[in-house]
Length: 225
Length: 277
Image 1: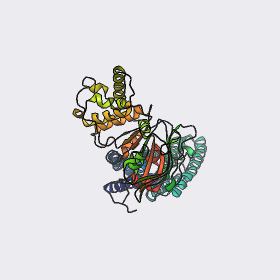
Image 2: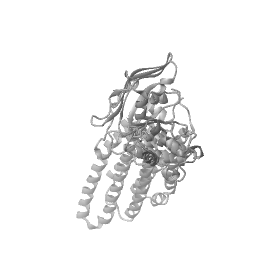
Image 3: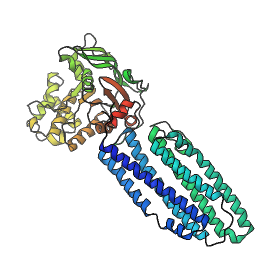
Image 4: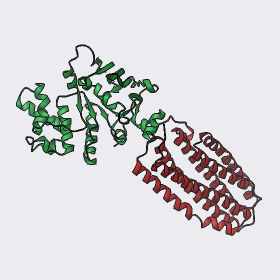
């Protein structure tokens, strides 16, 4: 059956393009925030702290696009699921942007103290969280549920690292009370990175729903609608 | 409109012989088995099997010429009058084959009423339109019973409040939406079990359409409703089950909420998302 190229299809592709742009920005800001923390580069941290506006603008724009598509085209089946997924992915990406700001805030405070230790696990968490985001967005573009499932599996690694970081820093704090403040900031940062992984997981779950109509949230594969 | 509450899920087989069966405990109203319909040599409907449940709204959708109206008309033998038309298969209403020998077609049509796309009130008063079926079927013993039946049917069709003070004025003076509701009242007056509706709102403005849709929602408490519509959103809004027809075949028959969010067949998906060439 010949497929008709329609105005709606173009709008849907434009929506996807904007979401990807937003995902790219969010991922970059996570990278920059962690990099700023590691290199103690205040100006780099400040760029993250005060550079949230483009993501916020995209957040509003994507929502408006979705509302317009729903209202004007009353999409059904795959198209309906794609737009509902876009609304949810949009919220997740915006939250990732906010979490990058939270990381930058903690990094700025951390930079005013002597380093507690050489940072190994937090940059690793940053790498994993960014990779999860990237894969989740790739799975969205390619409608790839296998890749989306891989993202879900990665989440456990982040959770494990977060627990490990907490235990390690606890020992530093018990040893030397002067490290309490900076160590707490590192614990906070690990918590933010773990949350970023959760948002990437949400995106992957939305992709699975969009492609196969399967609801895999909360670890229970629910039957399709 | 709220989505239908948890409905039994029909069992659906694959495309050409889609033969969904409602859940075992759901009362069955119409049971069609292997129905084919011919206009002379041309086969317009091909081996259709479908089980329609009582007190539900079932919508037939599909592109023009897919056979949905033809199929609707086989459900009360409205195609009988077409020269050269021929039916194979069975259409059982309450367990009785309406194409079986010795069937009283007039009595059967009293049970299976029909409303058409274009409202077609008789050039008579509002009262006489609603009273027509009751009179010719001698369903009322006196004037007061007749008036009572007319009032009841006009109320069921959500028209009474608008016309009660002018029952003896011409039906043709009513608006399009009111005329259509009068035709629904006329169909309801003879107390059918099933109401077949062929594009009942396609000639109406959005407000009149909304009233008809609201009416359909209310009527399903007492009637089994089958509606043909070009308007997919309308099918989504009013029906509990949806059947998608394509080139004379029943492609998919499903719970409406499932059909419009996650259809099983690729062909249905392509139709619902407008990806037809």
